Length: 101
Image (cartoon, rainbow, N blue to C red):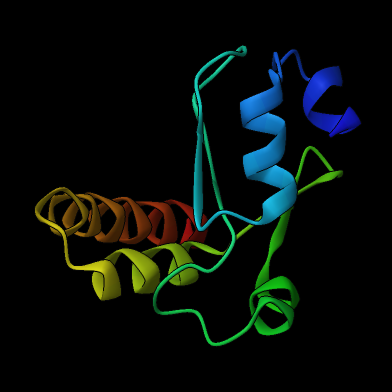
């Protein structure tokens, strides 16, 4: 909770309860950027497995791997997720091409 507040998110009582209760999805828009907290993402077998594949951004922020994000969106299967999967896979190919140079 303190980490979210330090990042600039305003946590009202209802939002705090949702986070602490482990609601499946908590949408946060009262901060410096939109943030979705997903406690049980589709397509990810366990938190521990996903954590082992996570990457550190700026050397301190763990972020789910691109492959896990794609797998989760593919498993969710919503129309907007299907569109996201196409964009993420294209980004991944471009990123890998740049990385090989």
